[in-house]
Length: 146
Image (tube, rainbow, N blue to C red; front, side, top):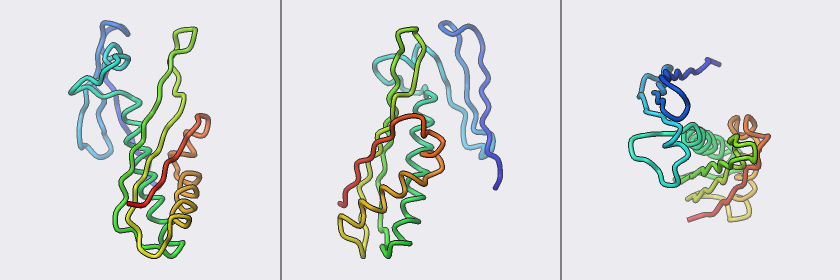
């Protein structure tokens, strides 16, 4: 399997600096990053965060893995809507830590009932490569059929 890469160019200190993260493998975009905007209570338009990028990676990986597991279980996925919410907390030391990921999936699947869908979703949560990479954090899952 190929290695995928991203690159960040950062200028300045933590609080007064800023940077850009570039998705170099796919060359699909360059996104602004800033620590003050990363820790702002409200999302800042036009600026992403490492946690948002992790959420994007996790939701897309989980959707792919779930479609595979559903097919193996005899289901035919028509659509999967997956959201990953990455929670960041500040430790007493001031360091940031990813406390958990909440996965939510709503699916339209032929050939499986709600119990079969939930079983497949739980298996996909355990076997998705991004879930495995994030195994040191609590990853929750809310799965439902449309």
